[in-house]
Amino acid sequence: MKYLIGIIFITLGLCTMGQSLQGSGNAYDLSSSSAYAEINNFGQINLPLTISAWIYYIPGSASQHIFSTDNTSSSGYHGVFMDITNNHRLRVHTGSGTVYTPAGRRAVFTIIPNHLRNNWIHVSGVVHAVGNIDIFINGIAQQTSSEGTGAMIMEQSSAPRAQVGAAFETGIQRVFFGGYIDEIVVWDTSLTQAQIREYMCKKVPPGTPNLYAYYKFDEPNASGAL
Image (cartoon, one colour):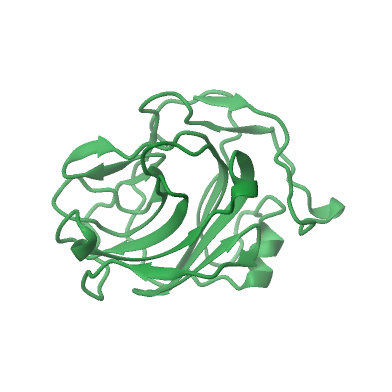
């Protein structure tokens, strides 16, 4: 379900008054148990790519999935996916399609600082290539570390099924997000820091070059399929 949750607070002064988000004020409420959305016919997308989103991050006792380009229930991680662990690691992964362990993925992560938890933040993962990923929070490049020992390839299923707020692992739907998500944007290119800062603060016009998918979550109600 999507509910009116008020104004997204723009942090660090990166958004000017003329760039403030314009829209319904709605966001995707994933705070209830086991809520998620499936995106049909997302299609295969090659690297490089960029995934951006506004999230209201509420720390929890388990990992929380934000978005996946290819959320398959078959064996192994696929595509590109973004999540947050229970120790506040914001991670961006590529899956090699083999197993649901670190041997089936490559990832980078950064720690979400304490003052940004239980708050709206803007997150971006810029995947230049497998193992070459940048993470931005509120338009600021973060120091990252690497994890995972998967092959240096990104596997995709024949009919990718993207998801918001959940992920399959070992064939079971789990890893649910426990907060709110808004303005997911997928680009089929590597955005620069300047571009991330520009688009985080406004609606993206239709037909913008390299815009692959855009989920605004402006409707007041929705089912679990997009």
